[in-house]
Image (tube, rainbow, N blue to C red; front, side):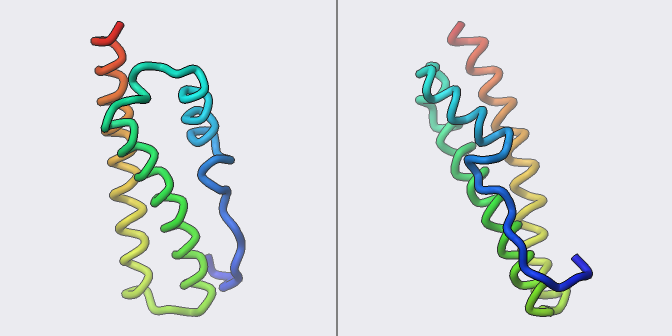
Length: 96
């Protein structure tokens, strides 16, 4: 981050979680029809967008106080993604 250059993060569909999300939907698994699944997809997309926003703003030499907005969102999204994965695991066990 010290280089202050803009570069592109992987798109949400290119990372391992994104590929896993797509494969689960292709298989039509029941838990992909839940609100937790939709929340996971939304949060995962926002996570990637927030990282890209952070990189872009950092390249513009924005102060840390401005970058904190993005870093806080990234941190919250990571926690939410793991919480949602746990919810989906539980739902999958109940669905059988």
